[in-house]
Structure formats: structure tokens, C-alpha cells
Length: 79
Image 1: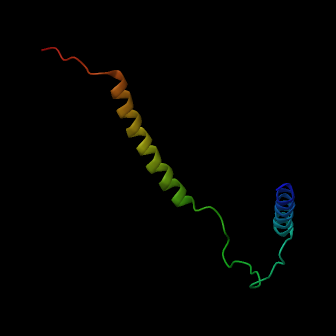
Image 2: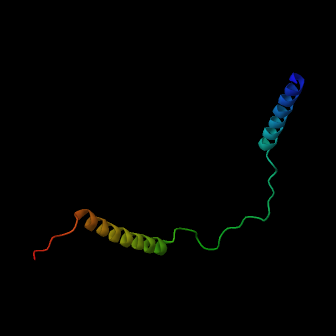
Image 3: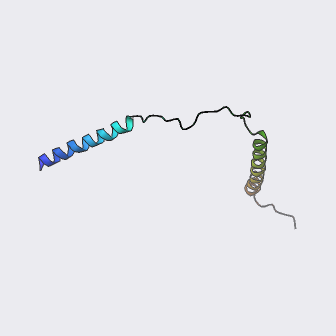
């Protein structure tokens, strides 16, 4: 039984070492197609950024207004 346990331990250690060695070896890099320079400059889309910021600002404003009204509590009206 001890011989089987020792054998199993050795085999599992070697298997683990083989997995680590295979993971560490880098596969060669293949170039699929040549790189090219874009015809137009690449940069941030300012109009989209402004539109998203506006929508998020409106959303946050409405959310804060509802939160403020909720925290303020119900108003008592003179009756």
C-alpha cells in the first residue's frame, strides 16, 4: 500500500511539473497579416463622450432629486 501511495505521489508530481512546463513554454507568434497605418487619425469621439456625459448627468440629477425628496420626508400641508 505504501509503495502504491509513493508511486501515485511521484506520478502526480511529475504530471503537475509537466503541466507547468507546458504552460511556461511560449508558442511561436504568427503574423496573420501585415500591419497598416490608418488613413484617418484615431482619437476620442468627443460628440459621443459629451452625449453620454449629458445623459448620465441628467440621470444622476433626477436620481438625486428623488433621493433628496425621500430623505426630506413628507411635507405637512396646512389644512
